[in-house]
Amino acid sequence: MWHFVQDHSGYVEEDCENKYDCGTWTGANDISVEDSFVWIGSNTPVTFTNWTGANPDDDMVTKDLDCVEIFYDSTWNDRPCPHLKPFICEK
Ligand SMILES: [Ca+2]
Ligand SMILES: [Ca+2]
Image 1: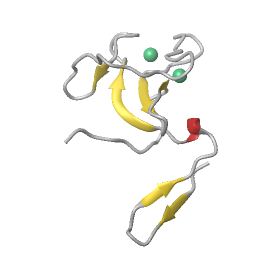
Image 2: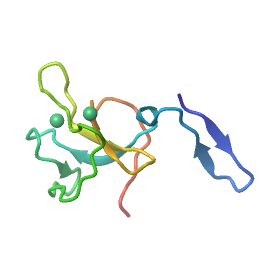
Image 3: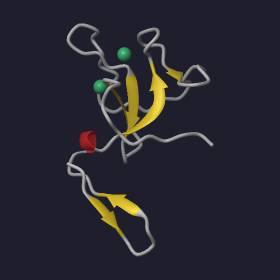
Image 4: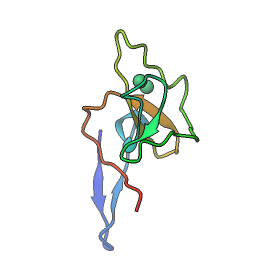
């Protein structure tokens, strides 16, 4: 569940009951080769990871989890790419 609050400075804060509901796409993905994560755009290998729990947990049979989201606790999760989520970009 998403909760959006806009304070007087204009910043939007989110308050999430479950971190799995509040991920942000990072651009890391293993769409081309399963378990070989790369950054979208540059296609360079992901050399640092901070997976949460037993992730990545793509079994390629019942789940198709090829895009990486990051949670507010900085841990990562692989999730189906079609999910609509906020995203972050390198500038
Ligand atoms: Ca995958
Ligand atoms: Ca996962």
